[in-house]
Image (tube, rainbow, N blue to C red):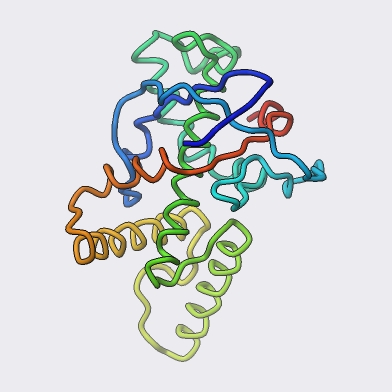
Length: 224
């Protein structure tokens, strides 16, 4: 990843949590450090204090505070298990999220894992568009697609037509559905066009090549 920052170093921890999420099928692995890197502060952005604040730019595409907070709960349970099993922390302790989990607070590890997840989301979406696949890029586009999907499901039910799954999908369920389908489609395109059979290796390579800018002022204020 291309990251430069004059303020402080930033080292990601590969969560190893994402692969455990049902249907997501993203990169697997155990906790460990990505190559030491320093995200660039986002310059020239007037940052609002609401959910539209930009936490990061991934190849120019925004990760908003609203999206970041929407994705954090996906990894919360897995992070609690990791810190408990690996470092003996008690998730029931009031100070669990501020306690050291291998040199970093449990909250910091959760934030790093969430950022990694969202970086992959943007890169996967961009790759899908470049491959000619239908994909919503960014959180606002995702929410619009989710709303459209549920309207279509309601219309089909009202018309007496068959639908697969529930009449209305939660945001979390729709996210899993979108990610799973996008990963399957990209795997097929990679195999057909490049003979690549390892999606995880491919996405890791895309992350290394990506330009990622992080706004520390927004990121560091993120809390549960």
